[in-house]
Amino acid sequence: MTHPPASPAPAGPATAAPSPAGPGAYVIGVDSGGSGLRVALGRVGLPGPLSTTVCAEPVRTGPGGIDAGHLLDQLLPAARELLERAAESSADDAPTGEVAALAIGAAGMATLGERLRAELPGALADALGVRRLALAADAVTAYAGAVGQRPGAVVAGGTGMIALGTDLTEWHRADGWGHLLGDSGGGAWIGRAGLDAAMRAHDGRRGGSPALLDRLRAVFGPAEELPGLLYPRSDRPAVLASFAPEVAACAGADPVAAGILRAAAGHIAEAAAAVCPTAARPAAGGPDHDGGELGEGGEVALTGGLFRMGDPLLAPLREELAHLLPGARVTSAEGDPLTGALRIARALAAGDLRLPRHPTMLFVPLEHGTGQRGGTAARDEPRTG
Image (tube, rainbow, N blue to C red; front, side):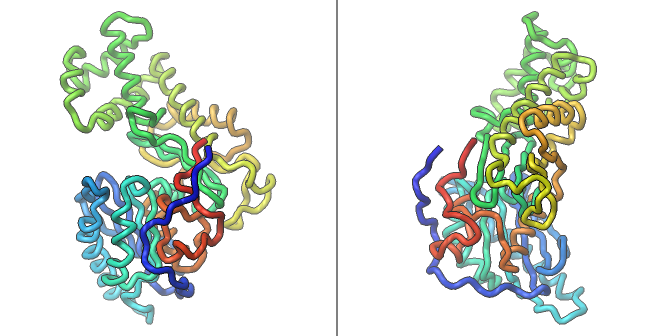
């Protein structure tokens, strides 16, 4: 799929990038999602966070997109608290209070992040002195947490499902289109398929599962009352996904439930295969971009609560991946999206951010308009498939 050249995203005047920060400088990673805002403080030269804090209120989204003011109202006090805590416990001469880089990963950033890209660079520079900032889609911070800065692919599975891959030149995305248009193989998809099989058993239609009908009644009550419970809910995807563990629990003894999970595994593997880099992959056994070894099939990392179902889903998924991506290394995520945001901030501070810039997926304001370092120019949307 071809896309027009990227339109300039909002940014201040282009200036020369600051020189890399020293190992003692602070970095901040932020993960903004449906359950609230998580903030981590770290240092450039140390792995992992020094401390973290949680703001339980999710950032509001309105007609203008994600509310930048509401995000700042939560982020700034949390960041100052973490900096004060670090200053009190610091026993060395690190530049206390200096934030060398900050990275924010937010759900909806790619499509609803215009206000964040317009307002946050100036606000964070004024409030915290931040001169290096990255604003990323949550799929990108999930990638950075799961894979790091190596080429590969990540599948993030929960209520929904999205696959994201990169050859370190551009981003490739598959699915993540919501429960009405996609998210195939995700928790809501599995739950809905399980409830469909239960209702078929209730009606006496082919493809029904008496075992899943029993679980429907145990969880929701009489089957004929389920539409009245489900359809008025604004959180229907989450309600559907809540039935996915019941499907997994029945899969060992019920062929219908097992078939649902096999179909889900097929959808997930297809999405991973669509985004996993191939042409730009190093030769078999050659070094990857972090100095490790990358096999000829690439790396596919699995992250998110969906994969806590264990073998009922993972066993058929590994079979499907072996068929579609022979030789691929299937791994568990190294870290979560907050870990990914902190990694992006640390790499940005050190002048070593190798993940591809993109005007909505991974926006680095200071660099915008001054050229895309470390990769080709970004497209308006990541390539799909």
